[in-house]
Length: 288
Image (tube, rainbow, N blue to C red; front, side, top):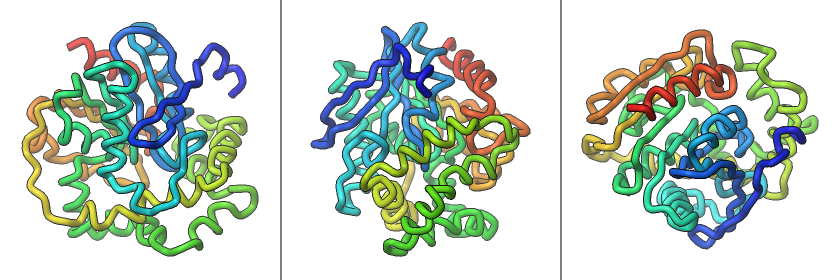
C-alpha cells in the first residue's frame, strides 16, 4: 500500500454537496473509475498506472467509503444522488466528458449515469455488473440469482449487518475477497488490511450497507429502458459467485454498440484477479 501510494495524488473535491476523496495520476482525457462493495479506490490499483500513460485517471472513493463524506440519511445513497455525484465530479474536474469505468456497485452507478447523461460519456466500461434491466428481471424471476443475492435482503435489517461485518477485526470484509477469489494468491495480507482499514472508518459500514437499503425500490420498479447509444464494453469474470453469467445474455438488446469479454477462471473481483487481461481488453476497446 505504501509503495502504491508513492507518486499518486490524493485530492478532494465537493460534488453534490459531498466532499469526495479521489486518487489521480496522468494527463489527458478523463478516465473516471468507480469501485464496488466493500472496496475503495484501491481496487483500481492495477489500472491506474496503466491508463495514466495517456489519460487523467481518477479513481474515486464513492460517498460513504474510505475518506469520502458519509452522510447518515439512508436516502443519501439513492441512485439519483450517486448519479449526480458522478456528473458533478466530471464537471468539477474541468471536463465535459469522460470514459467511465465501473465495477460492482460502481458498475450500477455507471449504467445509470450512461442513461441519465449519455452526452457526458465517450465510452462506458462495466465489469461484473449486469445491465439494470437484466438485473431487475433476474431478481424477480431467477431463483438462482435470488439465492446468490441473499445478502441484499439481509442488508435491509437495521444495525445487525454492521455488527456482524465488524466482528473479529472486520474479518468478514477480508473473507469477501479471500473466500470468493479463484486464485488465492491474488490478495495479499496488505491488500486485505487496506480494505479492512477503509471499512473501519467511522460511519463507513453503515454507509456501505445503506447502498443496499435503497436497492429494492429502485431496481424492482418497472421501467422502460431505451437502447443505449454510448459504446460499451462489458468485462465478466465467469466464476462470479454473486452474479450469474446468464445475467449478461441479451445485453446487446439494450446497447447499440456493445462488446462483451468473458474471462474464465476468474471471480467477481475481475480487475484485481486478472489485471493484465482486463487492461488488454480495455486498451483494445479504447483503440476502436
